[in-house]
Length: 423
Image (tube, rainbow, N blue to C red; front, side, top):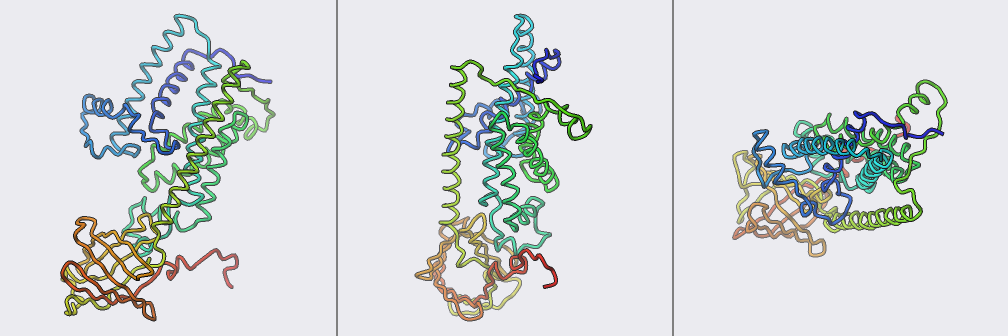
């Protein structure tokens, strides 16, 4: 049986220490998204050092109110570079101390590095995979997406639109991530989990780059971690899959070897996985409950204005009228299910926050820019999807007749999977 205990070269030691330092610095604390209700900013020491480093050595300036932590921002790229510089310094000093005192613990360091990467990658993959399975990450194909033309989408918005259309594809992709993440939590299934996660993350990285998703570096870091977990098995994988040669099993030394420390390790692992499971279930349950509580399926749709009356005067549909509405959209199944968009005849838009009472048949909404800009309307549904709204806006009486169209009336949402095309 092969073991991975041959004395590594100085370069190999230096690289391993650099990678270990970089990943620890990178993960803490922004890698802890899988710990529910933990405000990483409360634990973070990075903000001021990162800004100082960028301003002093890179000549960058930052808006403290818009650092965009966790996204592809200049702040995060600065932090990556700072992590790399600090890792280089720490790894160099570490290597000097090891050589001076003839310290030998490469097997333990390798086990610790793999454990850190396994748990971080595995837990992250489970969380993000479950967000696809349920589904929470991409949401539903809301009316706002259905009414947008392709040319109006950003590349990322276009990706989110087509991912939200097929629950089957999105859930399948998420399930693959969950399976790979679970396998990474156990030492004996690490290689299989790493291969599965690598396949999943390679696809994610390609989509993130191709569609300019704002978390490309986050996905790339996860992809590199899966490669790191497969690196020690590269020769075996090459023999088995490419050279058609037999391979020998590899024994990875556990992090804890003595009976007492192994028991501590089992307890620690149980606590980590148990706490993660409880908090993740709570997080996903809260998100699902929040979406359910705020969904407004019964009123979701686009409403095209047929008649608009203010204080008894009917406003004609003139393209220069900044008061008369052209249409309004209630996105009750979208990411923001309590949002309403009004488009005026001039094609200018305004966003409102609304609430609907189906028993009283009332619709109350106010401007996101001015909470005093408030409408209180009664609504009534007539045959042929005609809706009548009447009520007050400030001191004005409003009466609206509109033709509604729900999300299930579109060709895209009506078409399911057809196994036989000509039936």
